[in-house]
Amino acid sequence: MPQFSFDLAARSDHRECREAIRCGSKSFHAASRLLPAEVRRRAFALYAFCRLSDDAVDLSGGSNDAVGRLRDRLARADHGRPRPFAADRALADVMRRCAIPAAIPEALLEGLAWDAEGRTYETLDELFDYAARVAGTVGVMMTLIMGVRSPEALARANDLGVAMQLSNIARDVGEDARMGRIYLPRQWLREAGLDAEAWLADPTPDPRVRAVVARLLAEAAALYRRAHSGVALLPANCRRAIYAAALIYAEIGVEVERNGFDSVTTRARVSGRRKLALLARSVVESGRLEAGAPRPSLPCGQYLIDAVERGRPAPKRLSRPFVEWRESFVSTLQTFERLRRDARARA
Image (tube, rainbow, N blue to C red):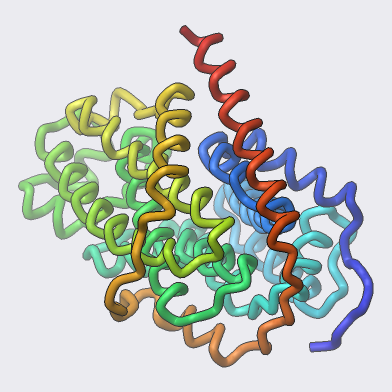
């Protein structure tokens, strides 16, 4: 790929990406405030392209043409010739600066293509394959923009992405069903004595569905535990944010359980007050995490790690420890104050 010595994105492009995450994901936006400024800016760029891609497929009614157009936009960004859109320019800049192989965001688009074709998932392993594409890829790219490329860190990042996607699936069972979709493993539904198509025709909080949701959240919880050791492999000034994101997304499962695992008539939400408590917990606990013994990657994510190892060489990192620590500290205080005000306003 050609190399460039100039920015591919303007400050206004990055500001537009920041607004996309502010409106699109309150949980991720809250956790991202704990990141150093430069890493946070790159995270916003990644999120903006992921959000744009997801919306483009949804708004097209699941059109494969939409996926094809996104692949063209990604290819242009990868070659340093992005389309004239803020998210495209910001993505191109981040891919170049952080040596992100195109195969990683291409895998995300493949997952969206599976959505477009209405693919269903027979087993948990098949669901893992999907989750690695639409969420594990994001975890891997986030690790790369933090300057970490070790296979162990990337494997744990994929664990975290898959766990987060399982949490989302467990939360959105009813919402997905009303759109004619079901992501729960079909094999599990049959084992519970439930016909998936019959249930989709009349989605109710059936005790058998609740049992499957509980089973899926147990799998997610195991992956969150695996992922925690990977946080210790990240730069010290990034650990709080990633650990906070893990805690907040895992809390979705806690809320689903509080609702009796009924994700059909009730959508679990993590309150601003609870997010504030989890952010505080992340500040305290993230420094105590230990890497532990290396574990193999989930099979669904190994090809992402291989793509990084085959890809571009890692860029040289510029050390700005004091400046980054100060920025992160100030941002942490601002985040706590904003969430405290939000919690008071809702009280």
